Image (cartoon, rainbow, N blue to C red; front, side, top):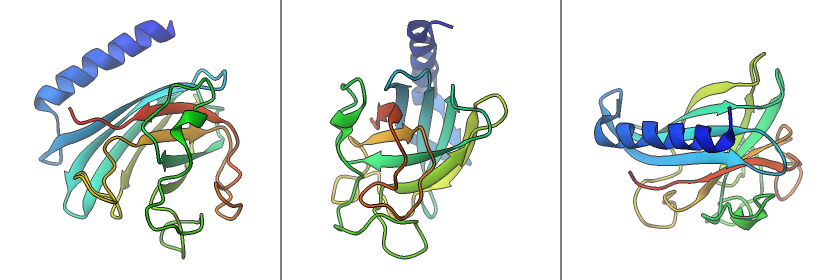
Length: 175
């Protein structure tokens, strides 16, 4: 399917979701439409709802390498305009921490880890973003970007986990 048609379809679905979506009884709070970058064909959508333990994010991706791991991070800038998504800046890191794995020592609040694509190159996953908020402030995610990388995050290499090129990028906006 043509990327422009895909973007139009995703946009139409998002408009519908904005009007009435819920996840577990929670109203839609943010959306990021991910577009291909770095010559990839990766596209997707992340929808965020306020959950009892913090924002809950549902991510749908397509066009990834089947069966492979891909780093996924929230980046500092809400700018995906560069062909390689470098305009999104580094990982969202309001605490000035080292890159790492959430729950296992120091890490950026934007360090989400890696996702695994299925045999069709798709991902459908849910994450709790307990360290982030949907409000303004130092840990607010609205206006930041979600970036998917070609390779897995090694959770060690500074400053970004050696996850390779940025293959998809989208900015979190309020519906």
